Length: 167
Image (cartoon, rainbow, N blue to C red; front, side, top):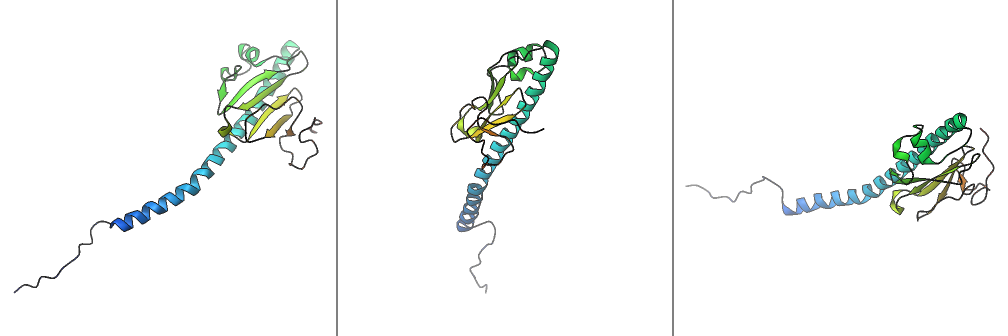
């Protein structure tokens, strides 16, 4: 005679085990995704600062060759700056535009394309100083205003015209 014992198969996962794993993955994603977004914003800001430095170098070359500063389109047409920087082009979440262009001055703005692209907006002037304003909503940094990139928040220059940094 055979004994009929109830045996439980141990193949696969139970519904409870699957729900626990899915819950753990959800909690991990809830923590990781905001951190990833913050890193992406900081990366876009760093790219914008480097782009403004490149534009400043191009302006210096243009000034040496022509004796005056120019707007972004003229820099692109003279092949001193890559085509991607033409007026109004968006690169890595930032839009680059010129203002206050005269033979001896210029301001190039790097403004967020949307509020979610970064925390700060920037500009660079003929002196090579890069100014920033941190705000939840996108906006443009007026010429000579904001905080110099690299200064601490407690600096006296925040929100007012700043003296050029020693180089």
